[in-house]
Amino acid sequence: MKYIDSHAHVNFKAFEKDWIEVQQRTVAADVGTINVGTQLETSARAIHLAEIFRGKPVWAAVGQHPIHAVRHPFEPDAFRDLAEKDGVVAIGEVGLDYFRLGADFDDPDEGGIGEHKDLEPDEIKDKQANLFEEFTTLSRDVRKPLILHMRDEAGKYDAYDDVLAILNNIGSGVGVAHCFGGDWDHAQKFLELGFYIGVTGIVTFPKSDVLAEVVKNTPLERLLIETDSPYLTPVPHRGTRNEPLYTEFVGRKVAELKGITTDEVFKKTTENALRLFGLA
Ligand SMILES: [Zn+2]
Image (cartoon, rainbow, N blue to C red; front, top):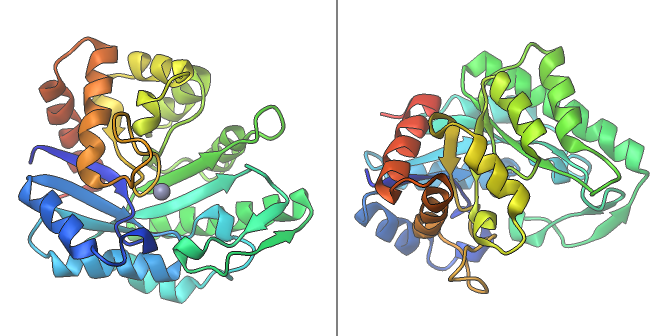
């Protein structure tokens, strides 16, 4: 395998018309993909893709994104059934999202109704924490690693500290801090717990110095590369829909920052993903 996009959403609406084609060209390029769920429906769709491409490097993760903690009730039995399926290699994305906290948005891209709802920030934080704890338990029960989503409202709320507190409380777990957006202090704490750091196309954007420092300091053995497609399209494709093959540009930038070859980044991050997710 050339490299693995450790976090994509070919299961999302943005790929509704051509998801098979997109996944097909990724597979044809000898590139692996983990498609990540954000609620029950997108999780089932990620599994569906893995089933269509059975025997190819296409896997699924199942979880409920914290932005869906309010509107969608947690369905433990349904998620447990999905989590145990073949081709499901992780639990996620799950975690805490404190960006624009208070304005809960039900994203139509992920099957929601596209409406905002105003709630008390503390009410949302509690619901997100409870949901996250449910999934850490599921992750432990089915022995599949966590894919963590964390997002801050700068200077207001710290999702990274709160996720760390919950992980410490339950005695850790293992997985990846996806689309890492914290600083090096935060990164070190996740690394100490045994987590990997997931790097997206944000690293190719201007003004990504904090992330660049994290990438430089994190041992190559603990980095994963990802697109988070259809979002976060890396330079030079900004403004277009992201897709798994653009992981290439993330790998190139990581190589530049670390002063090593792109091949080395592809090789090591692929080994990392194989090891963390137990991929065959
Ligand atoms: Zn994602």
